[in-house]
Length: 391
Length: 124
Image 1 (spheres, rainbow over the protein chains, first blue to last red):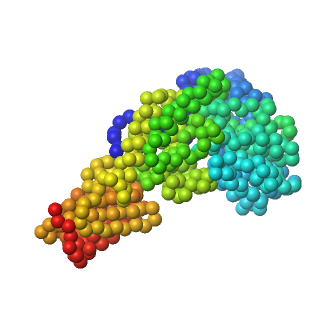
Image 2 (tube, rainbow over the protein chains, first blue to last red; image 1 turned 60 degrees about the vertical axis):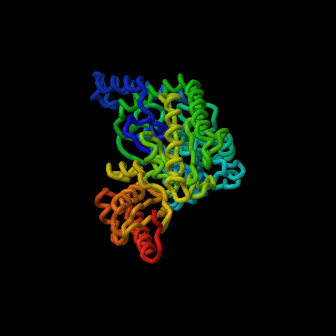
Image 3 (tube, rainbow over the protein chains, first blue to last red; image 1 turned 30 degrees about the horizontal axis):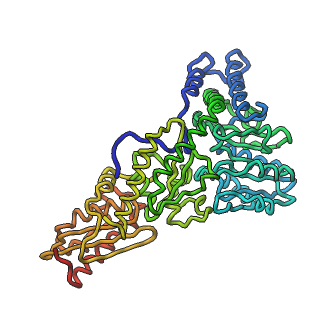
């Protein structure tokens, strides 16, 4: 079942390889005259580094259609989510301490909400329907006069389910409630026009859109004005919201990634649809195969499937050299069936066998064919081995 | 799976699956949590002539069952009840977190040995 050969990467939802343009931008920063300079230094090389930081900010701002000044650099979406949720909740705590989120959010969000619960905030935890979508009526029923913040992710990192963030945001904005959206899986992949969408806070990571690891951003709306209490204290960088010496090469990389994503958005979307369709069509005829998340509700860059009668840990090893995920990278270490899939109504047996395939710019039709063959072979072999099998 | 170690020994045996299946003869099973093990054996002249396994479980359990069958096929029947999880865990470098599953294999082999001792076993 396993073979020692070249890894086939189908785990783009965990991380994407830096694009050549990104590497070029970062290399220029790492080797150029300003490579040692602190972007906060007033001298010539410091100003050069600062200009790189602001150019990258403008590039990301163009992707999102926002003023550059609304973007704060962070170390990634996890930090952005923490800053957005905890920072906004604490800033508005004098007005009310009720918050709302969804059980299927990334742990960067759910763990932050749990920490706020421990600090005396009250959190309403909503459950999506079995299609993975949050019902607007359920959200509306949860909102109260003391609700200050709602957090709902755009694209679920495990299933690819896409929430109606425009409708959710409109519901919140009408009531003066802040809306945070974790867009780690959608920034640079789905259109996100924050000049139009009623979103107050938005988190993203560089390494999910072909930029480097270790850098992300938080969008904080200027209109209506959105206050956030910083989590860190220090040198006053990023308007005092996220102090620390700017990571100029990483920021340049994210800026280049954003510029590239803006150019490639439409073409990448078409490619993802084709790859998703090819993989699902290649394995759907296997008996006892379940697709987790209906295609019409999902971003096609992710395909999550479960197989009856198969042990998930053994399936993952049997799929090597395919690089895929059980649950998500952030949850995989626990070995527990995914709470996202359980929330969709999957029993433990199906949830534990779930595999997430996720595609990227470098994924080819030949890769998908190999993935189909590997998955089919692994599932059939493990079923033959199991009690009741035909080995 | 991050944090789970698969030694080269485990990987080889997991991939091999030479002893996967079943034979007509004595049977025993054990299950706990999400692990299920079924064993079957044929006996001739007081020795285990053929030994097969079916496993729904993690790679370590499958590899341990594969190795156990390899060691015990051809052995005296008494060897089934003398199998010890700690010995195979050491040989295959199975992490201590997997002790429960390998002990389940030990239980299944012991039950198989008792079943053979208690009643007629299948012949070739």
